[in-house]
Length: 45
Image 1 (spheres, helix red, strand yellow):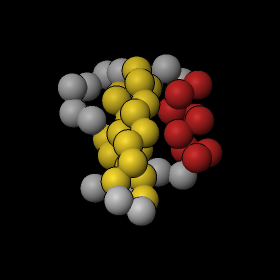
Image 2: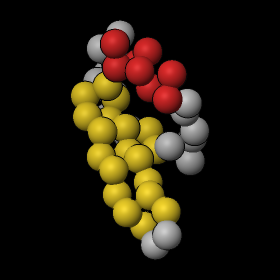
Image 3: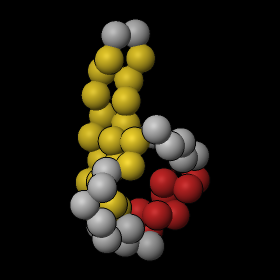
């Protein structure tokens, strides 16, 4: 699992590097899945 700050996510999105984001509830926390635009491997934060 990789981590990313909100500022890094914004920069990646503004640069066109993000094709989608999914927010999933998981117990008492949540998981953010970031789908990059230039690869088929999702990045999880």
